[in-house]
Image 1 (cartoon, rainbow, N blue to C red):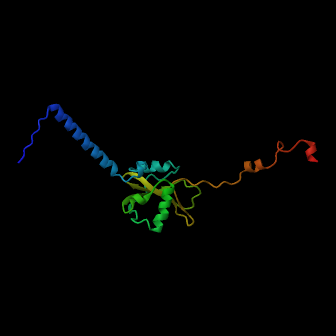
Image 2 (image 1 turned 120 degrees about the vertical axis):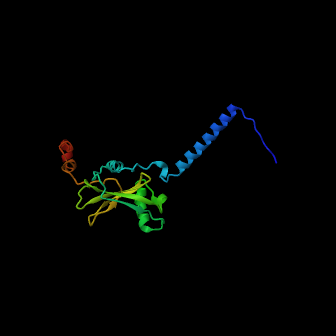
Image 3 (image 1 turned 60 degrees about the vertical axis):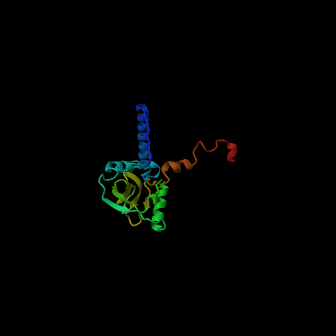
Length: 183
């Protein structure tokens, strides 16, 4: 049997303890940073109701402050689902990707939109939240001919205005005053 002994001075023992503590802290930091499934850590905060309402306001939406529906939903665990694939394409178009959350339960908060342009039926904003971060969502127009689209407010169709019609009509300044061109 072998017995090893080491003689350490007090400063060397303190230095070894500091290095060991730093290594433990580094491991903890790496473990907690890697544990989040938030893509690139850039998802907007959606932990509180105020956070979600404020997030929708960044797109110009005015909503009822209390959600009309709050529920857990499971993100499909297969990307071969055609409905999921189409919905995820919508999410990708607005900077989200639900494939990282496949098979997980997330919270879905539904808010009634109060300022949807020319709405003939209620319009709702759905916000998907995981670990306190917005991971996706949509705007759903419940009218029979309504559509589902991303968070961005739809652009109003441009109709020719009086100023557009006037600008296309010839003006005195655009007609020639040279009599030789009139002939």
